Image 1 (cartoon, rainbow over the protein chains, first blue to last red):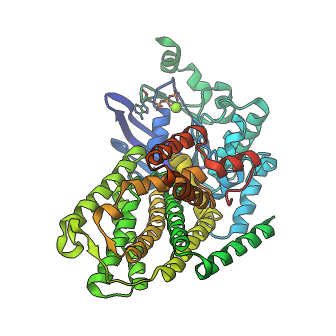
Image 2 (image 1 turned 135 degrees about the vertical axis):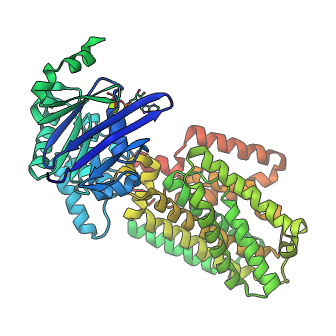
Length: 235
Length: 306
Ligand SMILES: Nc1ncnc2c1ncn2[C@@H]1O[C@H](COP(=O)(O)OP(=O)(O)OP(=O)(O)O)[C@@H](O)[C@H]1O
Ligand SMILES: [Mg+2]
């Protein structure tokens, strides 16, 4: 078996009495797009936070390209090649769109500038490069956050509800961009409530409920799964 | 515009350089004080204005530098310029030791920890009487060096301002601002925020350390309450908030305006003085939290280098 892009074994994380992630294991093969779905509060964001080191896991292991990354600091994990966006936008509001991207770079300034401008062009925001990120529309801020995450050229990309609050045209651009990243060999794991987006994009979907993985499979199979239907509509 | 500004800056610097030749003794001393406040406020701006970590005990570095410098001059017989440099180094060492644990603290906890540090240092220098003279203070050999100290303090104020400019226009400076804007996002982007905070803290300690040692030499006598007063930290903070935090010239503007008004206006109304100062703090925080230059910057879309 080839090395997994990401492998999680028995991950557990609780907040006080709340078991946010309860023994989740999953495996992502390189160069594919995966979906992570589940009702509100099922632990999707917490799982992302444990992978990226923002939350300290209680138990379990995380391997990135075969190497353990649990216990590393968030910035170390990011530097290894895991990029993420946040469910609630986290741009740097009083930095310009261009500066939001430039902060990530070191060394050759001209090359950094070129890469940042290229990425802003990629999401059609070049004209707004000098605008404070906080003054951009919600959808534009999401795009800035998305391309900012790409500045380090991560090989694993975690997207927490990329489609929420983005209008149709921007959304299609964003989904196209995600597909192109996959075609470049990157691995993508995305949390999404919009089942249309999940169906159109993901090859494999994981379903969480109350912190546990209750199903895994193709989007079509997942929608027929009894436990999934029960988790969403049952109670 | 830039050329006119640089021209005006050049004229101002030349006038300040020539001032001791025609100024009154009082005028020179007052200007020396303004230089000191520019260096202190500018240094506070480096850590608190850029990273958003509000240091409520920044005068600790001033006091540490003052004691380091004064001990070297009074007990070891060093010359004051060398002792002043060591004052800066001592403040940096203190920043390293204290910054490592304290910069992990967020928001008010960091502010309070810095406040505590200042109180601890004041107690320590009072306790180690043999070295520091304890509560009765430490006298330095008499020497009139006001004019050379004027120049050195002026260079220090200019250096802190230039350093601020260089940082703000660099990607290192932008990374410091990401800590203020959203530290979690900065980490997730691969920015080593702990290291960046520590660097900013070290840079913000050097100026106050040197200024403390210079002030100790200039005044010829120091005691714990004269070099570790909380009021000095508050003055630095108010100067920066008034002028505009996170800008290059905000601390300069704040230092000049507040010092001059304190000296020439409020000194005539000794009882109202404290009240007015308090009122200004409240007014700045409530009405213009960005400060004068911060407001201009937003309104006219000026760069941070103002
Ligand atoms: N920092 C925290 N402190 C305490 N409880 C938390 C914290 N973060 C998450 N939780 C709890 O952990 C559980 C999982 O939350 P999480 O945000 O991971 O869910 P989610 O699947 O991302 O939900 P949503 O679809 O609403 O984004 C919830 O019960 C939540 O209240
Ligand atoms: Mg979530």
